[in-house]
Length: 233
Image 1 (tube, rainbow, N blue to C red):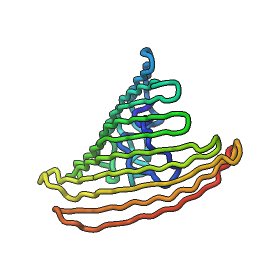
Image 2 (cartoon, one colour):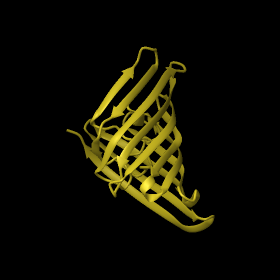
Image 3 (cartoon, rainbow, N blue to C red):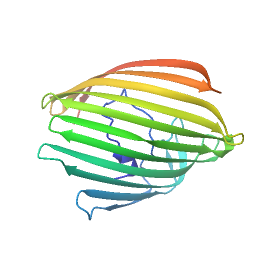
Image 4 (cartoon, one colour):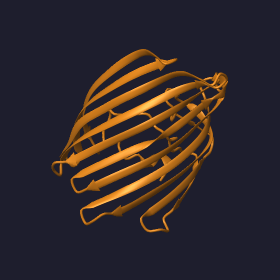
């Protein structure tokens, strides 16, 4: 279990992709898992330098080094219901677009409740990104929930809702540069036509508000509809 594997509210396939709080898992990693306590899994890992696409709008960046720790506890409430709770932290150093050193750290809590027919997931946490060469940092708060209900063995309906606030600050003046608040929601359904064939239909909505110096700059509305037929070999 890598630190970024405790996300539990992403029930959608495509439309509802949101900001990630924790650094992604990589290929050049040493990882240790401990499962000596019943229902509890603890994990830690260390990143070695590698090329990565983990950072928003920054493809093929070089990750210098990083660490991650995570814990996951799950247990049954009764013979029909169960829950799991997770916590994780990650920190990485990387090179940004201008090949200058930057860092990102994040912390997250997750809760998953489930029974035979339904799932409820909740993720919340903070992310802090620092770019000294630009004399700025960014702080992100995110809370996201999701519900999935299986109406049959083949099909289900689901929804996700998320709220986030991202703030950029000037490191020299210690003043806020700008702030973006986002509200989003996704509604969807999926159906397994065959053991190797599945389909889904999703509709998503996102509303952004941007501020600078306490003044509203702009607002944006994004609407997306997506469908797919997937065949597995």
